[in-house]
Image 1 (cartoon, rainbow, N blue to C red):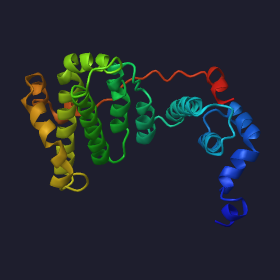
Image 2 (image 1 turned 135 degrees about the vertical axis):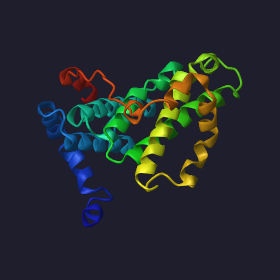
Image 3 (image 1 turned 180 degrees about the vertical axis):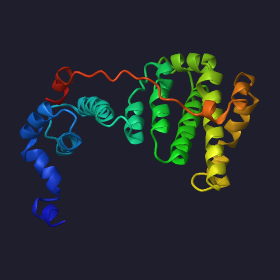
Image 4 (image 1 turned 30 degrees about the vertical axis):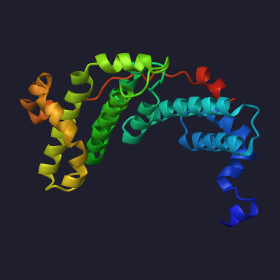
Length: 243
C-alpha cells in the first residue's frame, strides 16, 4: 500500500512493468516459459489499455491482449503440463465465435484438466458445468431472431452430435463424481444442492440410448484418460505478437 501511494496508485509490480518492460521482454526471449515474466508482460499490456498509452484502438488492443493471453496459456501448459488450471485456461481460448463447431474444441483440454487435477470432485463438477454451459449456448441460439451472424449457429444447433458431444461425456463425468462422493463419504462437491442444477441434463443424458454403454463400464473404464494435444511451439515464431 505504501508503494501504491507513492507511485500514484500503481503497485510495485505495475511500476516494474512500465519501467523495465524492455528488460522483461528480453528476459522472456531467452526464458520463454518463465511464468513470472509472462505475468509482468500481462500487467504492462493491461496498463497500456488503462492509460490510453497504446497507439492501438480499443478493439485492436483487445485483440492484441487475447492473442498474448492465448500464447502465454500455451506456454504455461508446456511448462507445467500436469496443472488443471493451465489446461482449463488454454481450453477457453479454443473457441471462435465465427466457427460454431469450435464450441467443443475445448473438450480435450477440459478432459486433461480433470485427469491432472488434484481435487477430482472440484474438477468433475467444473467439467459438468462446462458441458451444461455448452448446451445452454446452443439452446439459446435457437430462440434468437434470424440474422446473418446467427444463422450458422442455428444450423449447427439443429444438427450437432448431442449424444457424443454433450450427453455421453456429461453422464460419464456425473458417474465419476458419484463414485468419488461414495468413496469419500460425500465430502466435497457432493451435496444435493451442488448437483441440483444438473438434474434436468442428467435426466436427458440417462434417457439417451446412445449413452447406455456407459452404465456398464467398470470404474477403470469409466475414468477419463489423457488426450494427446499438439503442444509443439516455436517461441521465436510467436514472439512478434509481444513486441
